[in-house]
Image (cartoon, rainbow, N blue to C red; front, side, top):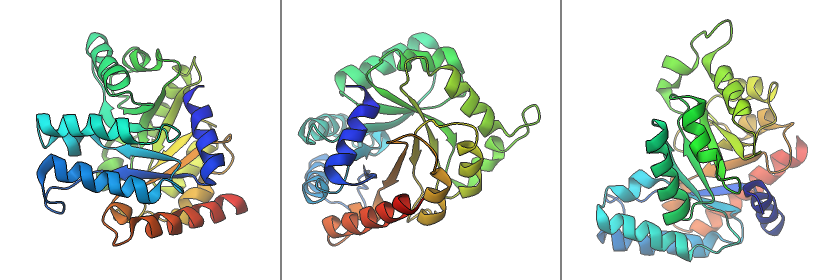
Length: 259
């Protein structure tokens, strides 16, 4: 199965488009890398009925050093196989370096999908998209306050984020490319959905202030599996992660059903 087929299958099993971020903060989770692993595995155990996939951010594991990378590998191996894993790595470099990133992320860490920077262009992205059964989410219109510094700039009569969407379409020869679009920018999400039916990964709900309902409504019109909503801190640090995840999943389900 390709990545989107695995996502759609997980959506059918869970009835959910919720992606749970697994981004441990040493200031909030004691016990070093081992404590982070135990905490995240407990979150997975409590949320697996309502989370259709998981998204560990590689940086949060790298900060623990070699123990963190070993913990990330163990985490990936212990997440149920029916739940796809997106490694949020945001890689972008010249071709031979991207080949090394691809081997590390897809072969060593067994990621089902990764996030990638488009700044170096199509040849760099194709080193990732060459893995036809894995997904590649290209950073397009991100959720952070500084996104507009570059992403909204005019690029030949269109904002740069729309040009990134065009690039993503061009490198989608194997049908395994999606876009990262932040929930903090629902108007830009709507602009993107008007020009592409590529799947969206939508971070920025919760701690970053994104409006879940507006963002999801703007996503409407893509194909099945075309919108994954990524939520991290509001679930990871909730007193009852399973309950928090179920509440978010229900909200997401309601908006998508009405769209």
